[in-house]
View 1 (cartoon, protein in one colour):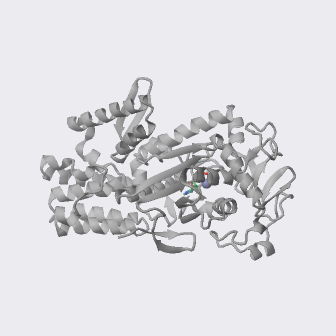
View 2: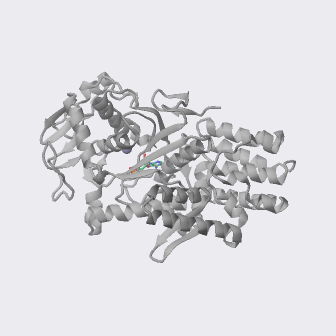
View 3: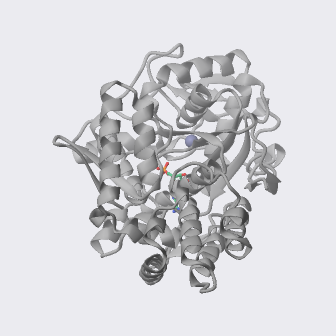
Amino acid sequence: MPFSFFNTLGRTVQAFEPLQAGKVGFYGCGPTVYNYAHIGNLRAYVLHDILVRSLRRSGYEVHHVMNITDVGHLSDDSDDGDDKMVKSAAERGKSVLEIAEMYTQAFFNDTDRMCITRPTVVCKATDHIADMIALIQRIEANGYTYSAGGNLYFDIAKMPSYGELALLRLDELKAGARIAVDVHKRNPQDFVLWFTKSKFENQALVWDSPWGRGYPGWHIECSAMSMRYLGAQFDMHAGGIDHIPIHHTNEIAQSEAATGIKPWVRYWLHNEFLVLDKGKMSKSAGGFLTLQKLIDEGYDPLDYRYFLLSGHYRSQLQFSWDSLTGAKNARKSLLNTIREVSRKAPPSSSFPSSFASSVPSRSLREEWGEKAAKYGEAFNKAIEDDLNTPRALAELWGLLKDSTIEPQAALAIAFDMDRVLGLGLSVETAEAPHDESLRQEIEALIAERAAAKKAKDFAAADKIRQSLTERGITLEDGPGGTTWRVM
Ligand code: AMP
Ligand code: ZN
């Protein structure tokens, strides 16, 4: 059964066909690291995680690329407002790069705690300025740019398909044009590819370019870095719905202008917003909730993960402390139920083969019989149907509550489902810190990872970390070596 996804490009549910059989190239827009991620941002990364885990569990080799925006993102997505990084650095009395490093670490600390699998490639904008310049040169050579007031702009009038993703119509845009704040823009929707006239004094990060000393516009980084790691055309791209009308629309315009390949990306997935009782949650408005705040209030990061999974990613989700408490109680009850089932199962079944990260070699029916397999199959169907996690969770509950299913079968299927859900069920069940054989296994993997790092085989080291994350175990590297804990 193939996956199907709601593709924002075209606004229909479409069967998923990767460009290359068995492989998926996926780019998820990463954080702008001028502050902590708020819990709304984390919703976007949980979607990326569920997508990647689901595809991998079905046997796809997923190449997942994520950027870190450490330059160029103004507080308004369409080139207006303050430079987010510069403003934050000034407020905190640090350099822009210090700020970027600090919040990048904080970001991964959050995502690790939420059992979010790390991307295959994490790339910083400041490390890819040459790629951005090269891409802008191609866009310029193809006639899609103009210079005005010291900046280089993308001319949307040259691209009749501009705005397809967001269902924008060029003629309507012109007729009802909002007032452009930037007088140099021919069209209000034109956007800067390269700034040389900084509006900000003492612009911290600038580079030489064919257009003068300056810095890139925000959108170009995602085009340049995704194409660098995934090729001129790739399978999937994701981000929050706020990115549809400007950021992703502009990414598409400039990428297709550079390569002439259309569609640049074949499937676009967008998560709806997490909203507070009082309305939108935004990083730049301040006063937002962080994962640490939830922890300080007595919640586990996985309570929040459970809360997010209980809604479909395309539905707006309203955050309240009461609903988080509901998720906390539900997760607690899930863990109690699974522990009960595990006590009834023979001891050898606490770590079934599905715990490993390979695709089960036998079908669920062959292995566990029709009745138990029914739940596993319904779960898979829910996930394959545009990542319907609330339905998938209901199947997990149905399985564990069905007293006619052999505990061993229930446990194995639940653990296999958890390779997608990432709730750390198998580890919780084993009460990992007290389980000697698991402890030894984890420590052997940590030693293997240390050896791989020493041999500069970072891909192998990352793979080990990832396999542990998928099992609900987080690693922390410190001066005294690597420690681990159950997430
Ligand atoms: P940023 O760090 O601001 O670039 O945002 C990181 C990701 O979070 C992007 O994919 C945004 O679209 C997404 N995002 C921002 N606010 C929310 C929210 N309240 N709910 C869900 N996703 C959000
Ligand atoms: Zn992006």
